[in-house]
Amino acid sequence: MSALSYIHPRANQQVQWGAVTLGYFLERAQRRSIGLMVSSEGLVVRMPLRASLRDVDAALLEKSRWILKKLQETQQRAHLQQAARMEWRDGALLPYLGQQLLLKLQPVAALRRQSAILQAGREAEATLMLQIAVPLLAQEQHIKVPVQQWFMQQAQNHFRQRLDHFAPMLQVRWTRLGLSNAATRWGSAKTDGSIRLNWRLMHFQPAVLDYVVVHELSHLREMNHSPRFWSTVESVIPDYARLRKQLKESNAPAW
Ligand SMILES: [Zn+2]
Image 1 (cartoon, protein in one colour):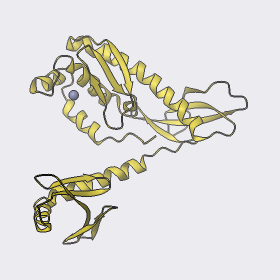
Image 2 (cartoon, protein in one colour):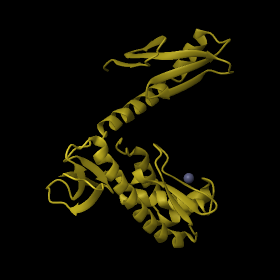
Image 3 (tube, helix red, strand yellow):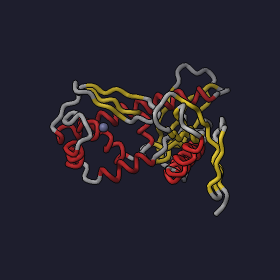
Image 4 (tube, helix red, strand yellow):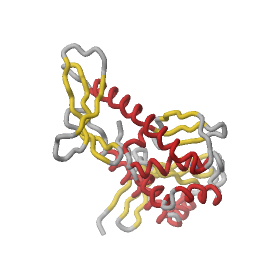
């Protein structure tokens, strides 16, 4: 096994488990038990004022499998996000409804209004092409802003259509659609029938979006995640578990 090291940027403690070096940030706090938190930076341990370092060592050893699994997962996720970071330039590819969208910049001498227009793709690798009018010396914002506006417009149309498609099947009525922009939250529903969906979902495959739409609509019947809720989801999307897992493993590009 090769040597692995996980060092928190503020590490003040270190343990060695075989080939694994773990540097973590330890702080004392007014609390009853030892708390462990894993983020993309690494492990943070919060210990009660009265506990000893030996207690911490024992707690870490007991949870070592969980800690290493979490560290590995968060590191992988950080790498994927880094790899998925968007480059805003002519010819860049962006996932859109599970397909590739090619960004084509069209420099315009006197740009009146920013616009993005979808064209049938001609390039071999990309099936769709988004043509964006930009000023002659385009900067990142000149590309990003119209593309985001275009994504949000598509999201409005697509979500409305899917909400209208699934609502009668679930015998619910939705009232309002709002677009959200959260980093990790994909949707929410309120008892008054208003639904919020994240426009970044438009990066994913339509089946995954349908799962999120049905999930939120099902909340209009069950405002919880009880077995009744899940069987409501399942009544419309029998393989929802697979799509749910796919959504968890999906990474939207960082804009
Ligand atoms: Zn839910």
